[in-house]
Length: 268
Ligand SMILES: C[S@@+](CC[C@H](N)C(=O)[O-])C[C@H]1O[C@@H](n2cnc3c(N)ncnc32)[C@H](O)[C@@H]1O
Image (cartoon, rainbow, N blue to C red):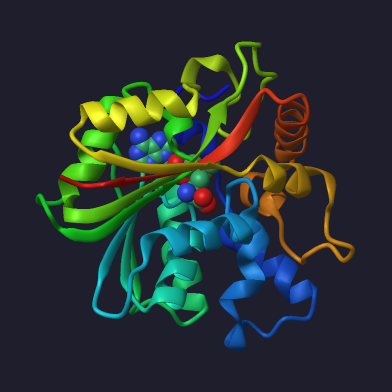
């Protein structure tokens, strides 16, 4: 059993598994479209559709700088860079994910638009006001101190820049089933209702602008799989244990215990 957050996520051979599955499905590795990775590199409820909601909320363009905190293997960072023209830096606690993010970006020819480094959401290695916007997708469930987390997201964002958090939030006081995709046990699991994030953001000095609950997207994501399965999936990212984690997440969604919520804040 993992003894840390990064120990839960980290595993060897991520890029090899993804490349192997794509090669087997007949994709040309010298001309790979980043979109083909979406079902494996967007590790959040709703996948690409969830990231599109985030893209709509940040409103960036060419020349802007975006930080994606807890970037995983970089799917959202690549999509946000491609769809907005902004340059994107991703930071993540898990070294294996950061290495995979760099390799996959090079593989799809996006190495110049995105950059990745190991780092912690609660102690970001950037100066104040470094970015035009900051995003965080499905990371806060691993972070106990939400005020410190929101304070860091707001600190590195320029004044009046947008901070967007798209996280799994609690809808009920019932216990969640484990393992969950973000933690095998309750030990490294700190999901909260959206109201706790909103209060933490306000306490950290950010202005809370809006929260939108994407429960319908979650129901669709877990209950209506695509007719043709994509060549890669979250199983290629996390290995066989993803099956039980996904089943538990689907159960918690279907029972109304949790839901993904997109929360938008403005930095002071
Ligand atoms: C469920 S994954 C989401 C990855 C990515 N945001 C996405 O949507 O595809 C959660 C990620 O958060 C990272 N993470 C967890 N706690 C973190 C922290 N305190 N600082 C930075 N990254 C963290 C994990 O390493 C993991 O990559």
